[in-house]
Image (tube, rainbow, N blue to C red; front, side, top):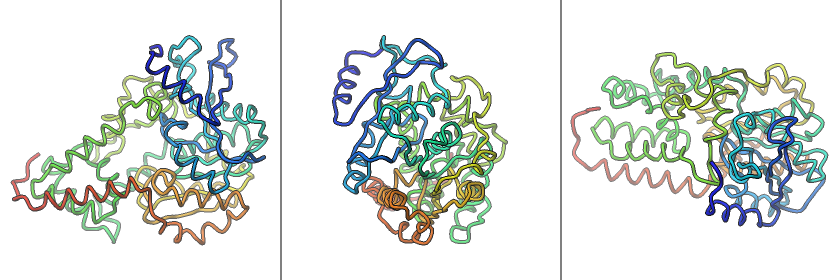
Length: 412
């Protein structure tokens, strides 16, 4: 697929923004064919910027994080964000065609980050990755350790074995009732699952609602389902599907999905038991369009003990996507790692609790990373992003309205 005129106009408009640059990169290692990889730098330039790497793969940087960069620059940070190869501004060859599959690998994306530092005239940087971005940040530590000043791993990935921690977390909360503060959720989920209402995608919807809205909001939604009320639930399922749709220059996973399934095994292998996140990914991620899982590029369990720089690990207590157990294990692997546990946070503090993320960045920049564990409760009280808080309030209001309707027999 080649770039059409409308996309070209939007591309050129983004490329003309202050701080946006392109660096020439080989399409594949050793290739004579090159393409423009874009990045943006904001704030007063320094010798040690912060490279922020979003999740995904598929989330764009230049357009999607303009507000974050503005706020970071106002706080004094020098921020670089790279448009991942195969996404947004870095999607096309010089001829306007999509990058070929062989151009889309984690090794090449990691090497792109080092090339951007070269182009920016920077020797070392602090790498802040969130979700999938933590794997790229750790990859820099593996392939280019001399470029790392410090590292922040927000809602981190560790290996393809993370699926086991995900299963344990979501089933413990929603099936076994192992959380004393939310033990009432599990009996309701089991009843709904037995009736066929809580389908294969139910765990993903419930996990998102719990992560960003808390147990009380999820409990109210489960009560609605038990009463035969499915309006809000159906709307949430539709919104979840829409969130994965391709939006140019914001979310484009169609090319880079190859990484998710071929190298990181996002789909996993369903185990046939209830609330399996692997089944959610099989249904929603369409892994059949990509090559099957081949091999993970790095053994981070073996590599992380070699990390010799200040490392901060951020974990949300309500995160069922990259549960706290993963962050806690990483904290035992990385020497002198600082674990920042935020009990009421969900997945990706960068995206849901921007003020807390910026506070972590500020502490790392000022050599105060070791203090972050102690002030984690204060960080947890900082308000989340306005849009997300309004969305949760809207869901609560919609649930309250639906609750006044007469109950109906429980049906699937």
